[in-house]
Each structure stands twice: as C-alpha cells, then as structure tokens.
Amino acid sequence: AHLGAGLGQISMLAARCAREMGISEADIDTHGYTVIAFEQMPKVSSLAQCLFHDNETDREVFFCSEDIRKLPNQPQRAQLIICELFDPGLLGEGILVLLGEARIKLCAAFDHQVIPARATLWAAAFQFGEHLQNCNGFDLSVFNQYRTGLMVDLDSMVEKGCARQLSHVFEVFSFDFEANILPA
Image (cartoon, rainbow, N blue to C red; front, side, top):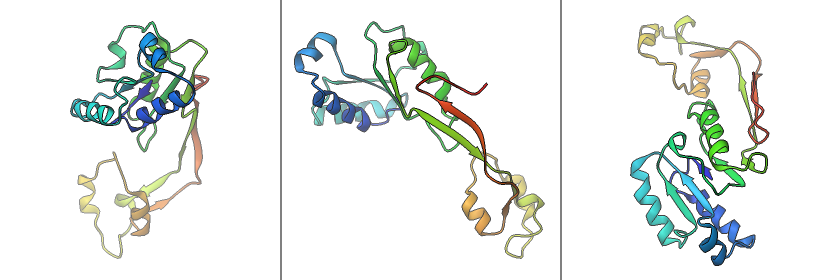
C-alpha cells in the first residue's frame, strides 16, 4: 500500500521491485494488484492512470482516491506500507490516523513493514519579529499583525536578523511507525 501516492512514481517503482522479486503475471491474475496507491487529490487520479498505462503498470498498480478511513477491511493483506504523508512538521497530513487505519484495513497484523520505519521530531525555541528591536536596522513590528504561524522560512529570518534562536535543539517526539510505537 502506498499512502500519499501523488502521481504514483513510487508505486510504479514498488511494482517493478515486486516483479524483480518474482511476482509473475499469473500471481497478478490470481491475487490482483501488487500495489494499491492512495491519493485523495481528485485531479491527480486521471494523470496517475495515464502514467500507469504509459509505463505498463496499470495491471500492477491500483489507484484509489477514496479516504482510507471509509474503506472496508480488505481480504488481501499488504506486506509493505510506503507512506508519503509528511509535511515539514512531520504530523500535519494526518500520518498517525491514516497509518493506523491502513494497518487495520490493509495489512497482516504483525507481518508488514513500513517505509519510513522511524521518525524523530526536533525543535528549538526561537524569537520572531514582534519582540526583536529591529530588522536590519528598521522597526518593522507594525507588520507582525499580518504574520501567520503556519510556515516560516527560519533560515532567512535568522539571516535577516528577524529571528534568533533561544534554545539548543531538542528532541520532542520519536516515532517507530513499523513497530507502531508512538509517544504517549
């Protein structure tokens, strides 16, 4: 299973690897697709289908644009989950919920692998704009009302003198997706 498949390039690569490991046409005829690609962006579906057809993987890769949480449990069980549901903050695209659902609905209980297997979220405290005395010699604090906290280009902010690091980098959470060990 491939979560967050986008256009399915990794799905096609996984299908090719399955072929190289000995999955035959007869296996596909008997058991169905070797890869199920999940991507919820509707406009991507037709493009992915064209890519699968053009690269002769349309019998091996099934593209599903449904929300995995709404699917019934599947009789065929996956041995591998490839997960690309990551954003710069690690957890913003719902990886914990969707990976848990994928495990329940698509995988053998204890006999599957997850890529990536582990991740660590690191942080540091920074001070931004509104409490700094100046930015390159100018007081720009009037613009602070327009700032959002969603995304910040930290490197350029530090470089411009609009931010400063207040703490050392520290580990916030560590995840073992394969063993399903999550922080409490």
